[in-house]
Length: 296
Length: 290
Image (cartoon, rainbow over all chains, first blue to last red; front, top):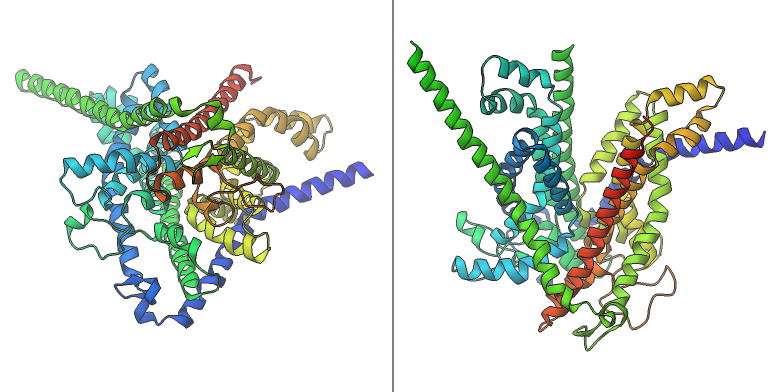
């Protein structure tokens, strides 16, 4: 009798745990909204879309922060996507088994390195190097951040893209090779197109990773909340949404306008990452059903 | 007729060679920084790691002495986090692998997990501040920080647990049920023990991630300097990654030895956990019954 009760209890707990992910996601959103939306009553909308972020004098223009995040993420994407996807192709299609066995765990190590450590190396090694090599006014620029973020996003892109390439049925490659295609042609015309969905997901997840990164970016981008103008802005200081929260939340009185605005920035981050993730996921779902249709 | 074909063939051979060379180059460009990061930190940091550095308090405005409170703080944070995330994450993984019916709710659970994994770590920090620190009134404390980290690592633990359990062949479960075992019995006696190495790997990977994260503990747990060790879960604490942030940005004139030493301790901690996870995984694979 007690035994059956114990079993029922265990099953019940497991079911509750199963649904917990939804509950937690909703709670997170609820608390962000709860703390962030008072902003709308305190700061006029026109000020929020203003070009000036200077909380001490009550300027809460979010535009420079959003653009700062965009330019750094864009730079990181331009670095990480080509390198990540080609590295994944190398690992999945070209590298001999022994090289593959070494490379994969290596890139996993990169994924596990704390971002604060990369930020530290960015400050003491990368920034001075860029400063003297590129003759910049300062080494702490959006470009420095983009470089670091590139390498932070690479492991995500490599491992997801490599999984996608791995999942392409052998028969596809064998068919192409049997028709006289070279391995190179097979990769570009058969394997990569077949893994397209997964590779796109890899790219989206990589972008999401770069966009949400905080510590490394905060430490090396110089944190100037200015509106980037033109490509030259890449080599000037910038300030991202994530870095703004991390740098300022510690010194803000809870319940103040500044506090509420920082939560509003958090809501923006939450919603944008949600969108990036959902796009990435929907690509996978679609690709999978397509593959199933073709194979059945 | 034959010559152009052969020429074409030769050209595509060259294209292939060039293409493979480029792919190799790209893989090298990707990996070189990783080697350099590890090399530079160990080379410049190991010299700074003395028994005093590991077991003493910082002195002279963090510019001298050791980092013991930071190391201990990270141990406290990650241990408490594990206590919170392991039961919940493993149970949720069991649910998804074994109980979850193919309904919209299950699909929503998966979408939620995916999105939890994608939320920026600083947003977890915000949530931890609003929920654990203020709403639950834990204050800036180890408890608030550990629970924030637990929520952040939850998706990792759930996903790896589910994968580990799914890799156990279904026939195990079928045999158990055919012998009169209940669902719960086959979960407890077969699925969990067989999936254990995979689950452990997931928990350790979560630990590794949590040990290195700074943004979630910035406003929920971390203190720049504390003269005493924390005595209860409701005390704030120093922490390794936060300490590295502080000594590399917040204090001017910091000796590089302290910075690189802190970075090296953090790196060794992370690499050690990575290694343990790898060993568990490969030993389990060698010993597997199926």
